[in-house]
Image 1 (cartoon, one colour):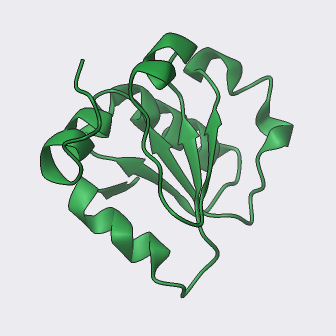
Image 2 (tube, rainbow, N blue to C red):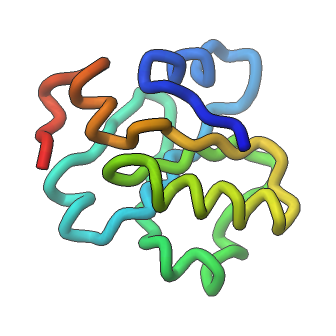
Length: 110
């Protein structure tokens, strides 16, 4: 499984590949409480339990950065997507909480 620390995410935005889809697998209330916004990317809130049913909404050719609160649910989704044939999927290690601490303190911690 490919994991990225919050400080490494910028490497996905260097222009060498298409911008990643930010797949936020948290529940809608969590997404509303705290969300990452990265220029040039699209964010899709798809709770973890909906991913299998909504798999056709994802493009296997596009890089995908999976995020959740602490990185556990998103790691499970990355493993699922890899088994489904997705090659360019990454987990945000430490989740949005690590993002708030290491990159952007304006993102609320909860």
